[in-house]
Amino acid sequence: VMLAGAALLAAGTLLGALAGVPALGWLLPLWALLGFGNGLVLTPTGRLLRAAAPPGEGPGLFAAQFALSHACWLLTYPLAGWLGAAHGTGAAFAVLGLLAAAGLALGAVVWPRIRAS
Image (cartoon, rainbow, N blue to C red; front, side, top):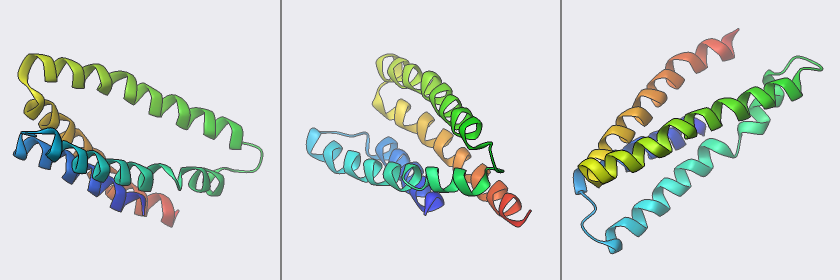
């Protein structure tokens, strides 16, 4: 489910780069698609962390996940704003779409190894 959501996020963001988001009528369905993908990625996170946490280490694992996710947002939100202002929304969508695709690829490679161990 989480990898499917990440694929939706990467594809939707890259679609925004290709389409150039010419009007608000095109952007609203794209935002809905991205929101759906985001929900697929984030909703199972708590369950995944509980399953991966050794006894007594759940709070530390949740804190680490929270810190890592917010560090990523701390980098990508300003990046999106700067790219959009300096180079247009197409460039912002392209760079963030490539980052999302890289995250998806990393997750797809690492996830089976973690699950198998």
